[in-house]
Image 1 (cartoon, helix red, strand yellow):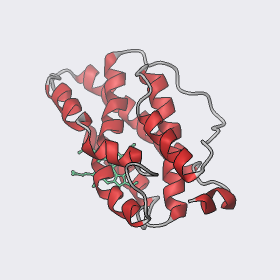
Image 2 (image 1 turned 90 degrees about the vertical axis):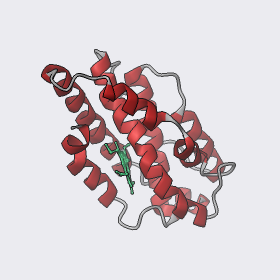
Image 3 (image 1 turned 45 degrees about the vertical axis):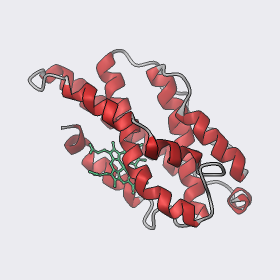
Image 4 (image 1 turned 120 degrees about the vertical axis):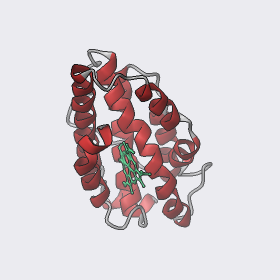
Length: 176
Ligand code: HEM
């Protein structure tokens, strides 16, 4: 249900990278946008910094500045269902990571240098854990599902905004 409810949003994020992460420009936009999303995700879910740390390592490695977003991080979420919606989106991005890493390796990046986030995500257990937690949800509990779907849509809207703002200056892209 979460997949169906967010399929159009996922397609738009995917379309925003028409040639995947095949160019330094596209990878810079992805790294900076995902870093901002990870910071906001960790703030909203009150999870300890993890994905944002992986991404900071990549930004440092390739000489990119973090995206200074013109918005405040979303406030901590009101309940576990809302947290689940955001976690679905973040964990799901690890499925894409397994595809995206191939092009990023061709750009010359490795788990040690420049592609730490994608390598860590691709080998993480996050998606399986989220699926296990989702499997325990009673699908007849409509209000609960509605809260999760609403939250997952909010998270997808947010990541799309982060990725759209991720484009840096020409100087930053040359650093890659
Ligand atoms: C940038 C280009 C992206 C590509 C090429 C991509 C590609 C993919 C692929 C191949 C899958 C697996 C589909 C399957 O096995 O059924 C997937 C799933 C998913 N991706 Fe992406 N992805 C991208 C970006 C993102 C981003 C930025 C996010 C969110 C932060 C995201 C969230 C998800 C979610 C939540 C799923 C799980 C859908 C489900 O099965 O419920 N993706 N993506």
